[in-house]
Amino acid sequence: MSKTFHLTTEDGLQLAGEYSIPAADIKGVVILLHGMGEHFGRYGHVAAYLNSIGYAVVGMDHRGHGKSQGNRGHTPSFNHLMNDISLLFKKTNELFAGIPVILYGHSMGANLAANYVLRKKPSIKGLILTSPYFKLAFDPPAWKVSLAKFMKGIFPGLTQATGLEVAAVSRDEAVVEAYKKDPLNHDKMSAAFFANVHPAGLYPIEHAAELNVKTLATHGTADRLTSAEGTKEFAAKNPQMIELKLWDGFYHELHNEKEKQEVFNYIGNWLSKL
Image (cartoon, rainbow, N blue to C red; front, top):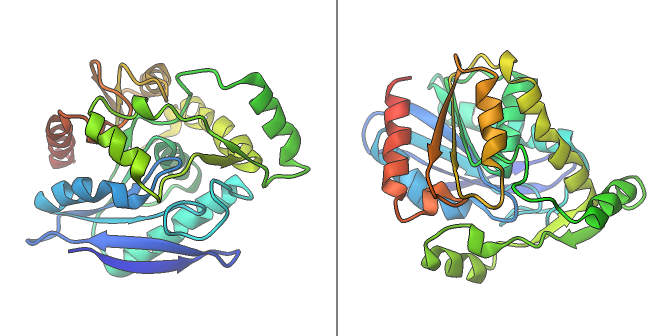
């Protein structure tokens, strides 16, 4: 059974958080960062699996997402997102003092997770990145990119629809339909969010050689949203620390494919070797 909490950001927003614990002894605690336009509540089955193998799980809805406050899909700066994660780390350490931490990010959350580890150098045991948003698997319309860059300094809160291809989320049609019907999901992204987060995806690739934490980077080869090639490039920069696992024919949400138990088992096995 999960429990909820709230975090107050430096600019006064309330972020909705949640955690769950295993029935037996705790081996470690996983801090999980969700992707763009979704929310932590979509990871209940992921948390349940991790609980079943002895890991507590802590997460939050990013600012402008899910049950958290803030304009939908907006952040004033990249540092605001980094500082929000620091609040989550602080809360985790309060809840699970002295227990090894693993940081787990999906898609945009993986972009944030990798950047956080490289820039902030937290004390963690491992890093898991699924379908990381280092590069997109498609070229966004040039006019949207230009508008976001132009408006970042004039009207940073200007919001555009992301145009997410929901059908590319998973090969499981039930997952796609549930995504469409979930009122906590959104397709919004502000000029400031795009102008900060999109280029930040390149930072982990450029600085991968500096990574000193055991990392699992995993991606579906048929992902049409984020680039598997970007993940391969990231992993190739530091094979001593980064284990690359590609899932042939899988779409974006590896944890929501029909073969998700295979993905969970792979992650569980990787964790057991930490």
